[in-house]
Image 1 (cartoon, rainbow, N blue to C red):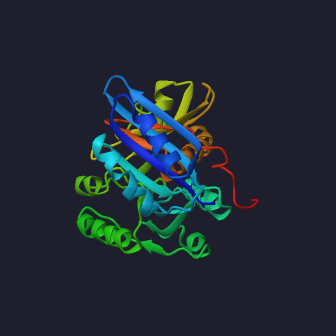
Image 2 (tube, one colour):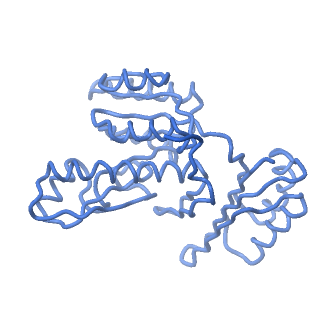
Image 3 (cartoon, rainbow, N blue to C red):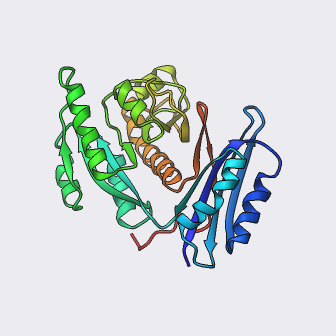
Length: 294
């Protein structure tokens, strides 16, 4: 039996949950998991519902049948098959811990994505990527060739039909144009607990401030550096006796875990943009299960 999901976003009003649940029941669908949030400050309503189509109705039939309700309630609605893996392009520079973690999770089926390409401005991880039978593209970036380099990157994204770009410690600032073009479709990992210590060398900044916690933040990329809507964060404790190099080593695991959780939330349709913030619903039961043992 096929498992589908419905994402809904609209202005808050009475009767939305009733309309959706009644519609699904009338179409012979059984709800298996559901979450909703009514933002009292903005007046926005968000809902994600997993369900099984017990009559065998397909996505197109459900979309067409739901269209009048979506129009009446003026909502953005998206039906999708939870079994279909989203196409992802990974971009990386010289720090490979997030890349390696994603590849491992992808290999065992713990991260439900299809990696269609890895792009880097260095050759360091070519063998690692090619050994996984994933296309590797080295695109050098300089001040002089940045527009041309980004055009090549976007050509790969469009050719592969990638829905998402993930910046696995890709140490280049993307242009405003690329950020706008891929709005809501680029996820970055930043090695600090934003909004603290933006920009370069956040571990050094943290050390100089004598912090007792360091962290990592995964967020959507916008034209404003390290200012995009936050998806996931975590921290780890440090002491006065540790050095900036200790911070880097301790931070690797936190970065990898935070990044993986953010990607998982996005590709499972659990993240909604809400102005400069996000609504992130909890994972559905069983959604973190691996396809095979590691």
